[in-house]
Image (cartoon, rainbow over all chains, first blue to last red; front, side, top):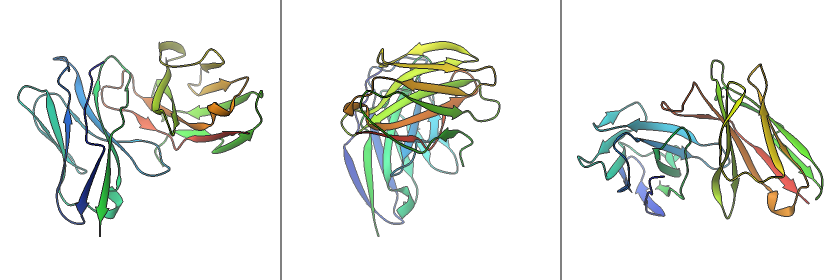
Length: 108
Length: 113
């Protein structure tokens, strides 16, 4: 499994952009990079995924480095509802192996 | 509502007992995954079923077993329960191989006393 490194925690002010980094230097060429988030007392929630090029959806943007060894999840305007643990997961095979993720605190 | 239904939401039982957790996947999804989340271990992949067949095993104890039925719902059976089995148990489903992501249920909180 590709190993990932994420900061344990980050803080952001409300309505400001947040950039959540992830290093996945051992990722293989065919592993998609998925991001999930888990709000308190809830199950994980899919955020976004990509392979090589940058991706956008209604929740976030995903910027993938050219060498694919790192990626950044971008929340364009953080809200209090975005406070969660964010997991970066390269999909190897069919199963997701969650790391410890980044705990995002949003300050009003 | 994610479309993945887990029952019961809460379960309290004594050590040594056996419990069954149930999961109904999102309509159209063929794969079901079980995860355990405890405070000190994070989210641990237990097992995957695809269309009734076991597809992959993770860190699942021998005291635990699962199955997926013809109607695609799945059950996770936990036996000879220990205090350390207290955790949140999540079920997730996907269309096939998880390429487009999983949909998780809201979990079953198991407390072993």
